[in-house]
Image (cartoon, rainbow, N blue to C red; front, side):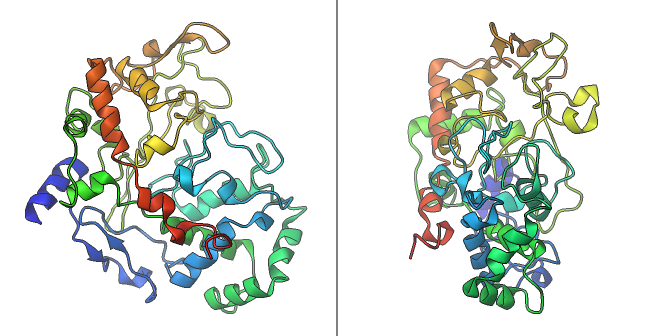
Length: 380
Protein backbone atom coordinates (compact mmCIF):
# COMPACT_ATOMS: atom_id res chain seq x y z
CA UNK A 1 0.00 0.00 0.00
CA UNK A 2 2.80 2.45 0.91
CA UNK A 3 4.59 1.83 -2.38
CA UNK A 4 1.41 2.28 -4.40
CA UNK A 5 0.57 5.50 -2.50
CA UNK A 6 4.06 6.82 -3.24
CA UNK A 7 3.59 6.01 -6.93
CA UNK A 8 0.25 7.79 -6.99
CA UNK A 9 1.67 10.81 -5.19
CA UNK A 10 4.49 11.09 -7.69
CA UNK A 11 2.49 10.71 -10.90
CA UNK A 12 -1.06 11.62 -9.94
CA UNK A 13 -0.56 14.32 -7.38
CA UNK A 14 -1.92 12.81 -4.18
CA UNK A 15 -2.64 9.84 -1.94
CA UNK A 16 -5.90 9.17 -0.14
CA UNK A 17 -6.75 5.87 1.51
CA UNK A 18 -9.45 3.78 -0.08
CA UNK A 19 -12.85 3.13 1.43
CA UNK A 20 -15.74 5.26 2.63
CA UNK A 21 -14.93 8.95 2.73
CA UNK A 22 -15.26 10.91 5.97
CA UNK A 23 -13.40 14.10 4.95
CA UNK A 24 -16.44 16.31 5.41
CA UNK A 25 -19.28 14.30 6.97
CA UNK A 26 -21.46 17.38 7.46
CA UNK A 27 -21.87 17.53 3.71
CA UNK A 28 -22.86 13.90 3.29
CA UNK A 29 -26.15 12.15 3.91
CA UNK A 30 -26.22 9.03 6.02
CA UNK A 31 -27.46 7.18 2.94
CA UNK A 32 -24.38 7.97 0.86
CA UNK A 33 -20.75 6.89 0.95
CA UNK A 34 -17.90 7.38 -1.50
CA UNK A 35 -16.04 4.20 -2.50
CA UNK A 36 -12.83 5.50 -4.04
CA UNK A 37 -9.33 4.23 -4.84
CA UNK A 38 -6.57 5.34 -2.50
CA UNK A 39 -5.38 8.04 -4.91
CA UNK A 40 -8.81 9.71 -5.34
CA UNK A 41 -9.53 12.53 -2.85
CA UNK A 42 -13.06 13.03 -1.56
CA UNK A 43 -15.17 15.26 -3.83
CA UNK A 44 -16.24 18.69 -2.67
CA UNK A 45 -20.02 18.86 -2.26
CA UNK A 46 -22.00 22.08 -1.74
CA UNK A 47 -23.38 22.37 1.78
CA UNK A 48 -26.86 23.13 0.43
CA UNK A 49 -26.96 20.02 -1.77
CA UNK A 50 -25.66 17.02 0.21
CA UNK A 51 -25.45 13.63 -1.44
CA UNK A 52 -28.10 10.98 -0.87
CA UNK A 53 -29.06 7.82 -2.69
CA UNK A 54 -32.66 8.95 -3.19
CA UNK A 55 -31.50 12.24 -4.70
CA UNK A 56 -28.98 10.46 -6.92
CA UNK A 57 -31.73 8.18 -8.25
CA UNK A 58 -34.11 11.10 -8.81
CA UNK A 59 -31.35 12.94 -10.67
CA UNK A 60 -30.67 9.83 -12.72
CA UNK A 61 -34.32 9.69 -13.83
CA UNK A 62 -34.33 13.40 -14.65
CA UNK A 63 -31.04 13.13 -16.59
CA UNK A 64 -32.78 10.72 -19.01
CA UNK A 65 -36.10 12.60 -19.02
CA UNK A 66 -37.12 14.19 -22.35
CA UNK A 67 -39.98 16.00 -20.61
CA UNK A 68 -37.36 18.27 -19.09
CA UNK A 69 -36.79 20.01 -22.44
CA UNK A 70 -39.03 22.82 -23.61
CA UNK A 71 -40.49 20.85 -26.52
CA UNK A 72 -40.30 17.46 -24.83
CA UNK A 73 -37.85 16.14 -27.41
CA UNK A 74 -34.48 16.01 -25.65
CA UNK A 75 -32.88 14.93 -22.39
CA UNK A 76 -29.45 15.56 -20.90
CA UNK A 77 -28.56 12.08 -22.13
CA UNK A 78 -29.22 13.11 -25.73
CA UNK A 79 -25.79 14.79 -25.72
CA UNK A 80 -24.23 12.60 -23.04
CA UNK A 81 -24.49 8.90 -23.91
CA UNK A 82 -23.16 6.42 -21.37
CA UNK A 83 -21.56 4.17 -24.00
CA UNK A 84 -19.51 7.12 -25.24
CA UNK A 85 -18.42 8.06 -21.70
CA UNK A 86 -21.29 10.56 -21.64
CA UNK A 87 -20.36 12.35 -24.85
CA UNK A 88 -22.28 12.15 -28.14
CA UNK A 89 -19.71 11.33 -30.84
CA UNK A 90 -20.47 14.53 -32.77
CA UNK A 91 -18.13 17.42 -33.51
CA UNK A 92 -20.57 19.79 -31.80
CA UNK A 93 -23.74 19.08 -29.87
CA UNK A 94 -27.26 19.60 -31.20
CA UNK A 95 -29.99 21.20 -29.10
CA UNK A 96 -33.64 20.24 -28.76
CA UNK A 97 -34.72 22.49 -31.65
CA UNK A 98 -32.02 21.17 -33.99
CA UNK A 99 -29.73 24.15 -33.49
CA UNK A 100 -26.04 23.29 -33.31
CA UNK A 101 -24.06 24.49 -30.35
CA UNK A 102 -20.58 25.83 -31.14
CA UNK A 103 -18.79 23.30 -28.94
CA UNK A 104 -18.14 19.64 -28.40
CA UNK A 105 -20.13 17.87 -25.66
CA UNK A 106 -17.77 17.09 -22.82
CA UNK A 107 -17.56 13.79 -21.01
CA UNK A 108 -19.09 13.61 -17.53
CA UNK A 109 -16.82 11.07 -15.86
CA UNK A 110 -15.52 12.42 -12.54
CA UNK A 111 -17.00 15.89 -13.01
CA UNK A 112 -17.31 16.05 -9.22
CA UNK A 113 -13.65 17.12 -9.13
CA UNK A 114 -13.67 19.87 -11.77
CA UNK A 115 -12.93 23.38 -10.54
CA UNK A 116 -14.78 25.00 -13.48
CA UNK A 117 -17.32 23.75 -16.01
CA UNK A 118 -17.97 24.06 -19.75
CA UNK A 119 -15.01 24.72 -22.01
CA UNK A 120 -14.17 28.27 -21.02
CA UNK A 121 -16.11 29.94 -18.22
CA UNK A 122 -14.25 30.54 -14.94
CA UNK A 123 -17.50 31.72 -13.30
CA UNK A 124 -19.12 28.28 -13.48
CA UNK A 125 -17.58 26.59 -10.47
CA UNK A 126 -20.37 24.19 -9.44
CA UNK A 127 -22.43 21.61 -11.29
CA UNK A 128 -25.53 23.43 -10.10
CA UNK A 129 -24.50 26.64 -11.83
CA UNK A 130 -23.39 24.78 -14.93
CA UNK A 131 -26.76 23.03 -15.23
CA UNK A 132 -28.42 26.40 -15.82
CA UNK A 133 -26.57 26.72 -19.13
CA UNK A 134 -28.03 23.74 -21.03
CA UNK A 135 -31.45 24.22 -19.39
CA UNK A 136 -32.03 27.90 -20.02
CA UNK A 137 -29.61 29.05 -22.73
CA UNK A 138 -31.29 30.68 -25.73
CA UNK A 139 -28.26 31.32 -27.98
CA UNK A 140 -27.88 28.51 -28.83
CA UNK A 141 -30.90 26.58 -27.60
CA UNK A 142 -30.04 23.33 -25.82
CA UNK A 143 -32.85 22.06 -23.58
CA UNK A 144 -34.96 25.04 -24.61
CA UNK A 145 -36.54 25.96 -21.27
CA UNK A 146 -37.49 29.65 -21.18
CA UNK A 147 -39.82 32.08 -19.42
CA UNK A 148 -42.65 31.21 -21.78
CA UNK A 149 -42.61 27.46 -21.17
CA UNK A 150 -41.19 27.06 -17.63
CA UNK A 151 -44.62 26.53 -16.08
CA UNK A 152 -45.52 23.97 -18.74
CA UNK A 153 -42.31 22.00 -18.16
CA UNK A 154 -42.81 21.97 -14.40
CA UNK A 155 -46.44 20.93 -14.80
CA UNK A 156 -45.29 17.72 -16.51
CA UNK A 157 -43.61 16.65 -13.28
CA UNK A 158 -46.22 18.08 -10.94
CA UNK A 159 -48.83 15.91 -12.67
CA UNK A 160 -46.76 12.73 -12.48
CA UNK A 161 -47.59 10.78 -9.32
CA UNK A 162 -44.25 8.98 -9.19
CA UNK A 163 -42.22 12.18 -9.54
CA UNK A 164 -44.41 13.96 -6.96
CA UNK A 165 -43.67 11.19 -4.46
CA UNK A 166 -39.95 11.14 -5.21
CA UNK A 167 -39.52 14.93 -5.01
CA UNK A 168 -41.42 14.93 -1.71
CA UNK A 169 -39.02 12.31 -0.33
CA UNK A 170 -35.88 14.12 -1.45
CA UNK A 171 -37.02 17.71 -0.88
CA UNK A 172 -39.64 17.49 1.87
CA UNK A 173 -41.85 20.54 2.18
CA UNK A 174 -40.53 22.09 -1.05
CA UNK A 175 -42.51 22.51 -4.28
CA UNK A 176 -41.25 20.90 -7.49
CA UNK A 177 -39.17 23.62 -9.09
CA UNK A 178 -36.09 24.07 -11.22
CA UNK A 179 -33.90 24.54 -8.14
CA UNK A 180 -34.81 21.04 -6.97
CA UNK A 181 -34.45 19.58 -10.48
CA UNK A 182 -30.99 21.10 -10.85
CA UNK A 183 -29.84 19.86 -7.43
CA UNK A 184 -30.99 16.32 -8.20
CA UNK A 185 -29.26 16.18 -11.61
CA UNK A 186 -26.07 17.67 -10.13
CA UNK A 187 -26.13 14.93 -7.48
CA UNK A 188 -26.40 12.25 -10.17
CA UNK A 189 -23.52 13.81 -12.09
CA UNK A 190 -21.34 13.93 -8.95
CA UNK A 191 -21.91 10.23 -8.58
CA UNK A 192 -20.59 9.41 -12.07
CA UNK A 193 -17.30 7.97 -10.84
CA UNK A 194 -14.89 6.37 -13.30
CA UNK A 195 -12.11 4.60 -11.41
CA UNK A 196 -11.92 1.06 -12.80
CA UNK A 197 -9.92 1.42 -16.00
CA UNK A 198 -7.03 -0.90 -16.76
CA UNK A 199 -4.69 1.83 -15.56
CA UNK A 200 -6.57 2.08 -12.26
CA UNK A 201 -6.30 -1.67 -11.87
CA UNK A 202 -2.58 -1.40 -12.61
CA UNK A 203 -2.13 1.24 -9.89
CA UNK A 204 -3.97 -1.01 -7.45
CA UNK A 205 -1.83 -4.02 -8.33
CA UNK A 206 -4.71 -5.87 -10.00
CA UNK A 207 -3.53 -5.75 -13.62
CA UNK A 208 -0.34 -5.50 -15.66
CA UNK A 209 0.32 -3.13 -18.53
CA UNK A 210 1.84 -4.38 -21.76
CA UNK A 211 5.32 -3.29 -22.80
CA UNK A 212 3.85 -0.74 -25.24
CA UNK A 213 1.45 0.61 -22.62
CA UNK A 214 4.29 0.96 -20.10
CA UNK A 215 6.45 2.82 -22.62
CA UNK A 216 3.48 5.05 -23.39
CA UNK A 217 2.95 5.72 -19.68
CA UNK A 218 6.59 6.70 -19.23
CA UNK A 219 6.41 9.03 -22.22
CA UNK A 220 3.13 10.55 -21.02
CA UNK A 221 4.50 11.32 -17.55
CA UNK A 222 8.00 12.19 -18.76
CA UNK A 223 9.65 15.35 -20.05
CA UNK A 224 9.90 14.06 -23.61
CA UNK A 225 6.18 14.09 -24.39
CA UNK A 226 5.22 16.43 -21.50
CA UNK A 227 1.55 15.42 -21.51
CA UNK A 228 1.46 15.45 -17.72
CA UNK A 229 1.78 19.25 -17.49
CA UNK A 230 -1.89 19.61 -18.39
CA UNK A 231 -3.11 16.07 -17.76
CA UNK A 232 -1.10 14.86 -14.76
CA UNK A 233 -3.68 14.69 -11.98
CA UNK A 234 -5.51 11.54 -10.85
CA UNK A 235 -8.27 12.72 -13.19
CA UNK A 236 -5.87 13.43 -16.07
CA UNK A 237 -6.59 17.17 -16.22
CA UNK A 238 -5.25 20.23 -14.44
CA UNK A 239 -8.39 21.72 -12.92
CA UNK A 240 -9.03 19.75 -9.74
CA UNK A 241 -10.92 20.64 -6.58
CA UNK A 242 -11.81 18.33 -3.68
CA UNK A 243 -13.15 18.40 -0.13
CA UNK A 244 -9.79 19.39 1.31
CA UNK A 245 -8.99 22.07 -1.29
CA UNK A 246 -8.40 25.70 -0.59
CA UNK A 247 -8.82 28.13 -3.46
CA UNK A 248 -8.56 26.05 -6.65
CA UNK A 249 -6.57 27.48 -9.54
CA UNK A 250 -8.56 27.64 -12.78
CA UNK A 251 -6.10 27.00 -15.61
CA UNK A 252 -6.91 27.59 -19.28
CA UNK A 253 -4.69 27.11 -22.32
CA UNK A 254 -4.27 28.22 -25.92
CA UNK A 255 -2.89 25.17 -27.72
CA UNK A 256 -2.26 26.70 -31.13
CA UNK A 257 -5.32 25.19 -32.75
CA UNK A 258 -5.98 28.29 -34.89
CA UNK A 259 -4.39 31.54 -36.01
CA UNK A 260 -6.85 32.73 -38.63
CA UNK A 261 -5.61 36.32 -38.95
CA UNK A 262 -1.92 35.90 -38.20
CA UNK A 263 -2.52 37.77 -34.94
CA UNK A 264 -3.72 34.85 -32.85
CA UNK A 265 -7.39 34.91 -33.84
CA UNK A 266 -9.78 31.99 -33.31
CA UNK A 267 -13.05 31.59 -35.23
CA UNK A 268 -16.14 33.17 -33.72
CA UNK A 269 -17.98 32.30 -31.51
CA UNK A 270 -15.32 29.88 -30.29
CA UNK A 271 -12.65 32.20 -28.98
CA UNK A 272 -12.35 30.76 -25.48
CA UNK A 273 -12.12 33.04 -22.46
CA UNK A 274 -11.93 36.00 -24.84
CA UNK A 275 -15.68 35.64 -25.51
CA UNK A 276 -16.32 36.66 -21.89
CA UNK A 277 -13.39 38.91 -21.07
CA UNK A 278 -12.51 40.68 -24.32
CA UNK A 279 -8.88 40.59 -23.13
CA UNK A 280 -6.54 39.82 -26.05
CA UNK A 281 -4.37 37.35 -24.12
CA UNK A 282 -7.49 35.26 -23.41
CA UNK A 283 -7.93 34.47 -27.09
CA UNK A 284 -8.16 30.72 -27.65
CA UNK A 285 -7.91 29.86 -23.95
CA UNK A 286 -9.85 26.69 -23.08
CA UNK A 287 -9.93 24.22 -20.20
CA UNK A 288 -7.87 21.03 -20.57
CA UNK A 289 -10.44 18.20 -20.41
CA UNK A 290 -9.94 15.00 -18.47
CA UNK A 291 -8.43 12.21 -20.56
CA UNK A 292 -10.27 9.45 -18.73
CA UNK A 293 -12.10 7.32 -21.30
CA UNK A 294 -10.54 9.49 -24.01
CA UNK A 295 -10.56 6.64 -26.56
CA UNK A 296 -14.38 6.79 -26.43
CA UNK A 297 -14.87 10.54 -26.68
CA UNK A 298 -13.83 11.41 -30.25
CA UNK A 299 -13.85 13.83 -31.97
CA UNK A 300 -11.55 16.06 -29.95
CA UNK A 301 -10.92 19.70 -29.04
CA UNK A 302 -13.53 22.29 -28.07
CA UNK A 303 -15.01 22.28 -31.58
CA UNK A 304 -14.52 18.62 -32.44
CA UNK A 305 -12.14 19.57 -35.24
CA UNK A 306 -9.66 16.72 -34.65
CA UNK A 307 -11.10 13.32 -35.49
CA UNK A 308 -8.87 10.71 -33.85
CA UNK A 309 -6.46 10.17 -30.97
CA UNK A 310 -3.65 9.70 -33.47
CA UNK A 311 -4.42 13.07 -35.09
CA UNK A 312 -4.61 14.72 -31.68
CA UNK A 313 -1.18 13.39 -30.79
CA UNK A 314 0.23 14.57 -34.13
CA UNK A 315 -1.20 18.03 -33.40
CA UNK A 316 0.51 18.28 -30.02
CA UNK A 317 3.76 16.82 -31.32
CA UNK A 318 3.84 19.53 -33.99
CA UNK A 319 3.37 22.26 -31.39
CA UNK A 320 0.09 23.41 -32.91
CA UNK A 321 -1.79 23.16 -36.19
CA UNK A 322 -1.23 24.73 -39.58
CA UNK A 323 -4.39 24.97 -41.72
CA UNK A 324 -3.37 25.64 -45.30
CA UNK A 325 -6.71 26.29 -47.02
CA UNK A 326 -10.22 27.47 -46.27
CA UNK A 327 -11.69 30.14 -44.01
CA UNK A 328 -9.66 28.99 -41.02
CA UNK A 329 -6.29 28.90 -42.75
CA UNK A 330 -3.37 30.04 -40.69
CA UNK A 331 -0.45 28.66 -38.69
CA UNK A 332 -1.50 27.99 -35.11
CA UNK A 333 2.07 27.02 -34.27
CA UNK A 334 2.86 30.74 -34.54
CA UNK A 335 -0.12 31.92 -32.48
CA UNK A 336 1.26 34.69 -30.21
CA UNK A 337 -1.07 33.64 -27.38
CA UNK A 338 -0.12 29.97 -27.49
CA UNK A 339 0.83 28.40 -24.15
CA UNK A 340 4.54 27.99 -23.46
CA UNK A 341 3.76 24.34 -22.72
CA UNK A 342 2.85 23.72 -26.37
CA UNK A 343 6.13 23.21 -28.22
CA UNK A 344 7.35 20.84 -30.89
CA UNK A 345 7.93 17.40 -29.37
CA UNK A 346 10.34 14.83 -30.76
CA UNK A 347 8.24 11.68 -31.07
CA UNK A 348 8.70 8.94 -33.64
CA UNK A 349 5.81 6.83 -34.89
CA UNK A 350 6.48 4.11 -32.32
CA UNK A 351 6.47 6.68 -29.52
CA UNK A 352 3.09 7.96 -30.70
CA UNK A 353 1.68 4.46 -30.95
CA UNK A 354 2.85 3.72 -27.41
CA UNK A 355 1.22 6.86 -26.01
CA UNK A 356 -2.03 5.98 -27.76
CA UNK A 357 -1.79 2.48 -26.31
CA UNK A 358 -1.43 3.99 -22.84
CA UNK A 359 -4.34 6.38 -23.36
CA UNK A 360 -6.53 3.41 -24.24
CA UNK A 361 -5.81 1.95 -20.79
CA UNK A 362 -7.86 4.86 -19.40
CA UNK A 363 -11.05 3.32 -20.84
CA UNK A 364 -13.33 2.17 -18.03
CA UNK A 365 -15.59 -0.60 -19.31
CA UNK A 366 -17.34 -0.88 -15.96
CA UNK A 367 -18.24 2.81 -16.08
CA UNK A 368 -19.80 2.73 -19.54
CA UNK A 369 -21.75 -0.45 -18.79
CA UNK A 370 -22.76 0.18 -15.19
CA UNK A 371 -26.55 -0.14 -14.89
CA UNK A 372 -26.42 2.30 -11.98
CA UNK A 373 -25.67 5.07 -14.47
CA UNK A 374 -28.01 3.87 -17.22
CA UNK A 375 -31.50 5.04 -18.17
CA UNK A 376 -33.66 3.58 -15.37
CA UNK A 377 -36.51 2.98 -17.79
CA UNK A 378 -34.34 0.69 -19.90
CA UNK A 379 -32.27 -0.96 -17.18
CA UNK A 380 -35.14 -2.53 -15.27
